[in-house]
Image (tube, rainbow, N blue to C red):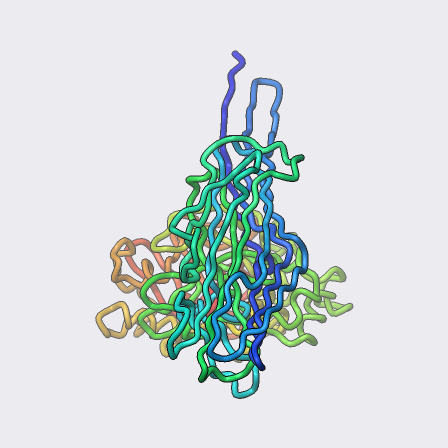
Amino acid sequence: MAHTNRHIKKFVSDQANNNLFLFLVLTLVAFTSVSTLILSSTFVSADESSANATVNVPEACTMTGSGMNTHTAEIPNGTYRADIGATTIKIVCNDPNGFSIYAIGFTGDEYTGTNHTKLVGTTASGNATIATGTATSGSTSNWAMKLATNSSATYPITLTNGYGSYSNVPDTYTKVAQRTSGTDTGTSATGAELTTTYAAFISSAQVADTYVGKVKYTMVHPYDAEAPEPTYDMQNLSIDKCPAASPINVVDVRDGEVYKAQRLADGKCWLLDNLRLDPTAVSLTDLQGNTNASNQTLTYFKNGGGASPYPANGVNTTWASSSDNKYDEPKVVTTYKDTTTTSYGAGSGKIGVYYNNCAASAGSRCSEGYSSTADEDICPAGWRMPTGGFSGEYAALCKAYNSGIDCAYSYNYTSMDATSTSSLQYNLSTPLSGSFYSGSAKEQDIQGSFWSSSPEAANYRHNLDVKDDGLRPSYNKPSQWGVSVRCVLK
């Protein structure tokens, strides 16, 4: 019997370069606003299927700026200036359930977690800042923003949170405008528009400099969709931007994959997700400079070395039988990359990519009998695989979540309830992702295994093994097996 199923799928795309840039120049002082193309949006599609047909109808929702507009005005010290230029963004959205526009202030080129609504001086001395604020006189410089909509538009939007007058730049993603319903044809010049203007008061004591900041706008739809979260550039993350209180989103610039990261009880910043980098699908250019491996190693790795023992095409994805278990050839399995399994804590629970140790080391640990610790791997630049063994980082992290008691004195499992918020499995957010060998995945939903950078013996590497009732922080796996990779910030 024919039947119809309706599914709604939502995808959030928050591109790092789709921002509204604000520049304040003080000499005598000039304020400059520059906008770049804005295409941060959520895409929603309705899938309808019958017994014999499937129809995919994407909702067109885009937000665009007006190119590289530059607005300049003189602001001598001790002066307040309003309406220093304006930038208009235009919205086309055919979602009948409307859309919302969120704004957040940045410092420099990224969300910094604290004080990120300040304009910051750019000279070598560069300690001067201008805070967000609405004062028009006094001893402290400040800057503010206000929004306006086109009231005569055929597809008008409404403001929220009082941004119709000069207000502080928001320090978290804040909904500043929305339309709750209706469809835009996208053909009218008077469609949905949102215009931002800026003001600045410069105190008499303000140091002359070029001050740089940013306001970023993001569209989500329908209008009541979940608010966006700030995302950090993983390759440029520092420990002070990795909080202990709650996880943050980090993006790997090599392939755009987004992960959770958090500072754990050992004081180090850990990924809370298994690495999902597919080295066969990423160019050498994308890897070089963005990966914790030398360009020489990566070139050899991606090109296969041009001779035995590497395959001519570099990384090998064929793993059909036990005869394909090789320690001297980089092998990966991407079949389960986005498959979720039993997991704990704040991570995604995705299995990720299985890597043999040759692939996990980006080709730097592939010789027979290789038994030394190497400092190269496929973790992002600035990150690395953790150390293993009885005195390694996995063992130290286990001890931190085991009331200070050493839990790496043997290869036996240390009892630990993975559902407890005080356990290592929960805080490191370990999925029971299993491992891969002899041509198939093993023990998914039963145990998880995670490579370390440390050798246990020739052709064996230490790893962390976890189950839902215990863990072994200093166990080992044969180098030729496919195992998950976690990364820790250097």
